[in-house]
Image 1 (cartoon, rainbow, N blue to C red):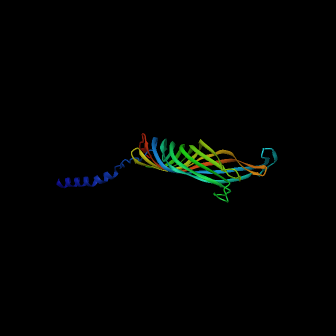
Image 2 (cartoon, rainbow, N blue to C red):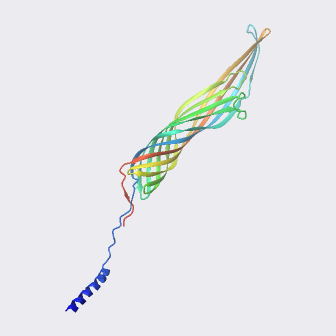
Image 3 (tube, helix red, strand yellow):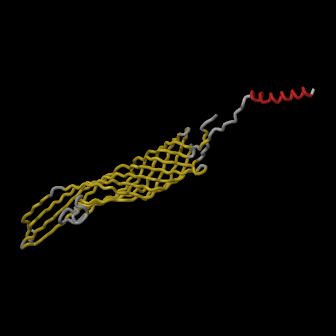
Length: 305
């Protein structure tokens, strides 16, 4: 009897592993990977530095007219002659460095599809960009006693705003993007042009003060990363082109010389007139950093098993 019980127990022990091997295996559940979601509205602020350029072209035309008269001491005309010199044209171009700090705020919206992120962003910047340049003619003489004409152009960019699209690729808590769109800036320009081409005429200047809003374009690229939770930081480069502007100036200066020789008075009167045309084009290169707060950011499931 004992032998029979021992054999049954041994058979049961041997058959358990075989039965277990025939049972279907159930794999443990695989959790879908979750990454940071860039979808949603955001607002933030930024600071940076800008290297502005005011490329300025000046064209100037001058003409001097000299009149000599001889009269008696009583004022009775004896003889008169007028000579008009050929017009003189001056042209030149210079670049004004309009550099300075800037800061402001931005707001936008992102929509993420898998790894791709599309969005729109608007920003407004206050700037301290200022700079200018000057001209001396003839250009091969340089500024000094022999200068026949002189001009200057001074610029300041008071504010700048952009409205841009963004397209990028997300790597979890990193976003690499390119951006481009509309740019609007308010520029103040002060032009001055002077002439001293005549022998008898004093130096005279014409001044033009302009304030105008220019519309152009902006394009650039940047990177954004998560600080913690809904807070992110960003670093961005933008190139801005605000287009061109024209300004005209004109002036007249008159000088005279008189001498008495015997019973006659000789008077030489000289008039010099000038007309100038300024053309300027304003561009900007901006590097800035900032922070954003994203509303309603939620994890994004990118795969299921």
